[in-house]
Amino acid sequence: MNKAGKIAIVIVLIVAVAVVIVLKQNNKTKPGAVVIEEPVKIVEGPQAEGLEAVEGRPAKGLPRLVDLDADKCIPCKMMAPILEQLKS
Image (cartoon, rainbow, N blue to C red):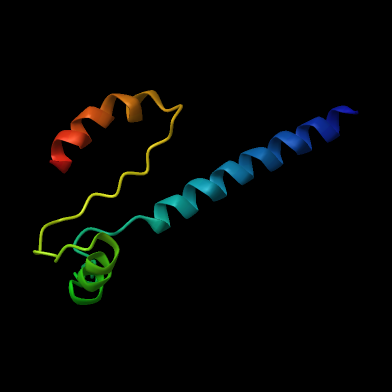
């Protein structure tokens, strides 16, 4: 590759880095801007009925823990006795 080609590649890389930096600066939230987030909705009705059907116990509005452990997962094995205590 000749010297002019190498210089052109370096210039293209510098321009690309500059474009990325400018785009990142434009994507940041400007000070004083208001960010509106939708509120989180908590649905208790249908989920509570489904848990009653699965477990055979009435749902009392308590939070539920779903254990998705794996047999080979060391942290899951360490957590198993604690989950058994919580179950009782």
